[in-house]
Image (cartoon, rainbow, N blue to C red; front, side, top):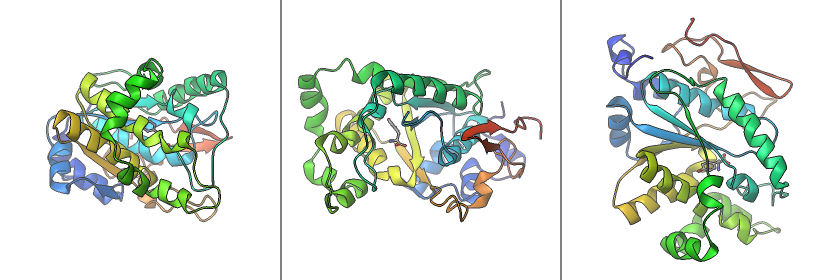
Length: 277
Ligand SMILES: N[C@@H](Cc1ccc(O)cc1)C(=O)O
């Protein structure tokens, strides 16, 4: 795969500039610090996908394109499929989620993994590593969870997170289950930091609160600074994308504009252009 420096050598500027050119960075930790991480030696980064349906959706494609860019630049991707968080439900504005049966969620998780494997490189020097947060979350006791993880979260900060605040102001409110979601995602980042020295998490712009919960947790318990950045989310299928349309273009070669993938019957189908164009 292309190395980090290839962007600059090929006259395309840095990886950070490439992502900015494509309009793929909405919000981030200190841009200088992020640029150092992205443009420097390979780092391990992750993005999570919850199995809340039998297929990824077009919104996930933006994250996958970013992951592919970072992978092509030599960084090490981790795709987290949320075997645990998929059972809880990330709070969304439209209201409380219905809990899906555990075996159904496990089946959806398998499908997501194979879709992601169709877009990211699964071989080579820096293949995507698949993990499920079920593996470290399910075995934690309630007592350990509250003592080791919960103790590091302040209620005021948790209540001020965008999605939570909005739901609190709605008629329906929010259950304790969904309210706790940010703690689980924060703990994922800490786990991946400890296990793989993962120092960067990415997500859609609706994920800022969840990303910063991991960032704060790592700072608090390990005294280390890590990075996060969010990207535009696709908000309206009819009107097109709120994301920069360039974001929906091939990420293999910098500035290439061949479409990355198409959506067919609700599934993401890579155009098989990776590496050819
Ligand atoms: N909360 C993310 C999915 C996710 C789950 C666990 C994580 O550790 C990270 C991300 C979403 O809804 O899109």
